[in-house]
Length: 436
Image 1 (cartoon, one colour):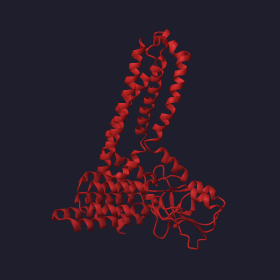
Image 2 (spheres, one colour):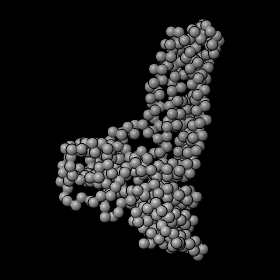
Image 3 (cartoon, helix red, strand yellow):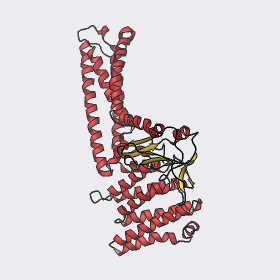
Image 4 (cartoon, helix red, strand yellow):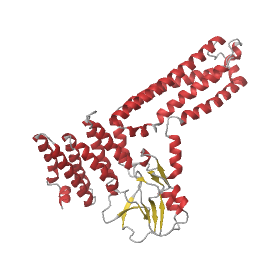
């Protein structure tokens, strides 16, 4: 699994659903703004406003001007908030149409967008609270000078932040940026696995899935502590990202565990695939973006080339997760925890086949991916990676070559594809290891 890894249990999943959205932080800002406004007005009346006035630091010299300023700030904040919401929705609509709807899950988790919305919302509510306390007929000395200074300062910050936020939204449309982030996250390993002999006996206890959905993540560290005194093999039948039906096996035990409830709490099941599932989602999303880019309506093969390069980087990063077919993936800190589907083959085999199916009609993309397979074999062979992985990569390249050649319409395209695959025949020590 990649980067920070899949979510750890139901608790983290619930927290993520509450936090990774566009409404939670603005809602907090709406609730906090009246409290901050009331505290500021109290401090203003207690000492700060009079001190500013007596030292000539007040911004305004007429009560009606102060009211007009507060009204203008409220109107400006309303316009900025409306504009930013509209631009955000337009950018997301265009970006998802070009790249893939599942990228929305990543963009909802962007802190800058949520912070910008919260800042605009907070300033709007705060300005309204201050406006309510301005008496246009009161003496200048009794104006809330400190609160008005806060309104002005917040407005300057918001105007500056708008430029940064709009720039960030514009960059959201830059597809290569999203692809680069996806590739970087997918290349890192967060759940270490090792090969182990699969348990061959009878399972004494099975925990079934309590609901239908997609496994969001498994808190292996918590389960290792929970089952510290428990003995025997444990097999997690469903990997993060896998769909389960209610009643399907979720976890099997050689010996019954002390409490099923704690096990279920450590395995979150959601309604749909999402970015919190980590590498399994990121790799598939790279393939989805490539396939969408190669669709007739978009026909952007350069985006597909970028996805092919990032897939190669992810493959290189996960070479250590390769498990031979005679073994089963196991959690390295607790090898009795079997993790089928969470090794290299489980992460990449399906997506690479889907990439082949999407790229076969595009000789340039097929050639790039075949070339990437050859580069990977050369690099990983020199690093002493398992021979089974090299064989897997060459077999993937061969299948892609055969598929692309069968669909290529021009003889020169077929010749270029064959020439790319010929790199595997070059006299290189690592490529000879593949042949061996």
